[in-house]
Figure 1 (tube, rainbow, N blue to C red):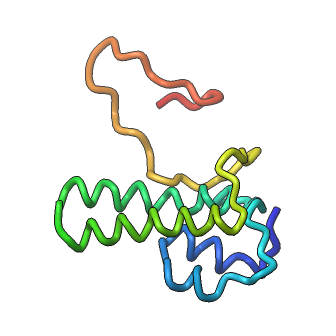
Figure 2 (cartoon, rainbow, N blue to C red):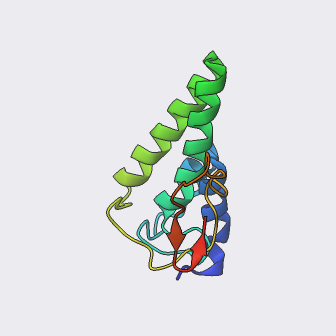
Length: 118
């Protein structure tokens, strides 16, 4: 798992702080490290990318398009610095996009996630 000194970087990735990450990420940061809450650095970034994608679908504004492009740029930047999208975190505790919606109707087959039924 990651050292506590890298906590700020995982939080910045999770929050989509493009300029902060690009300007202040330590040169020796392990882009394939694991954080106990966020998983890999790319997993931390996926949270905000999904939210920005939804905002873009809802707003279709120039501002939302630019925000989404910044997230894609940050994903590419992280990969250029060694982040491997094929890595799998053995466990991470954060909900990246929240809980799934309620089933749409009667007789709907619910999802069983290791004993927790959605």
